[in-house]
Length: 306
Length: 306
Image (tube, rainbow over all chains, first blue to last red):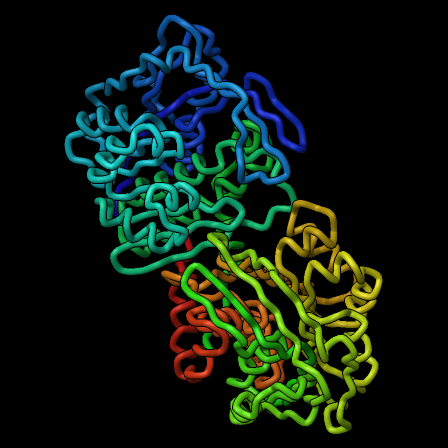
């Protein structure tokens, strides 16, 4: 029987203003570390490293703590919390940024509490690769280090991002980012090229088209859950990665078969997350809900041999 | 034990000029009825209804006949065969038409040989819905009538297309067409609306993102095969539909479980078809190749329960 391991997550904690065709929210709790931590918390204890300003309310702290997320590594400093404003149109795969205020995030330096440095499972959410490298320098011997990234870092921090890729076991990217990084129209070729840079596995996120996992041994393709409507896609990729990592840490098993299960756990949590704005849906979610939808995924994908 | 049924296919027979990032062909054999008939011919005998001009070479007739495709319904009339010229750029899901010469297709009226009118399995490939209705008027009691269509008919023949949808069992569409027909950004909603128009099932083709099957009872999602390169996407949708219909006719079983297997047969044949220009790859393909790749699809989609 495997033992559940805590999961270290480093990334942004934010206030989001989001407008979609189905509504809007202002100053809502968000950020890659928050979405991924809450998603992972359904499976395993989480140690969160990030930074917030003096304006970060106790209500949010209480919400995260109640989900089993350790906040020893959440720095509170003078100034305002990171803020993002954006909107989505008809194509919900495409976020349009209106405004980014780094605020306290501008001078953020991830400093891991001693108790976090033994982390075996590490998720470097989408932040500056320079910060991701600083985290990797502090963890002693991770069993599974995983990074996410975005087009902005591919454009502005490519050498540092490539350095990160050399040092992680799994890289998350969406299909456009994988193509952009490798300068090819073929996602399949791009995934191979990324694996040649270092990570043993690549996870390509395709939003409504599901996700793909490339490993040494095999290729896995998972669909997305057939939702009538996506209310707010914000945090879909982060909650996907969080569900993935949380499941892996909880089972302490990084075999190919378990990576596949983790992909579906991630897809399941992400499919709930986009059903409402901010963390609203995840705040009401249960492991039983996740388990039931996971089983639905099995039915959705099933077909017999010839 | 079920008995294999012949499959009636009505659609275009064409000469294609195609240019893609990986090469080009001129005056190559093509057309929706040709791609779908050849794809279906791996599974069951095909009766093809279409029209060609005096310029259609015996070489092509011989190729189709050798594949078990009955050409009694292939009209040969004075004039030139239908011609299409187009190209693909970086986004291989998007065909750009340079020129369409209807030629003998302009006055085509599908007239079914008597021996075809008892057809139990009917595939109305992508042609004018007015012609699709003429075919449906001539078949006595089909067990499974299936139509394909395209954006041009949605724009110019919507009432006739809706009439076709009332009379078929399964409608094929790509995701953009489904959205366009129903005026919604949600493919899931669009599929439901299309089913309310008549067909018991809807198959949504998504190119490199796979295909989805919506029935009364369930939702099925299949990935596409992970090809390094798509050499020529022409005929992908037609060979997908042909493989799907051929498998169903060969098994004479339209249960949900068998529809799923048919989707994967279609995806498998289509994945071979796009590996080369025109019918080149399918002309060398064997049922054993198809069977092996079908099994690969099972591996690609497989994951365990939680």
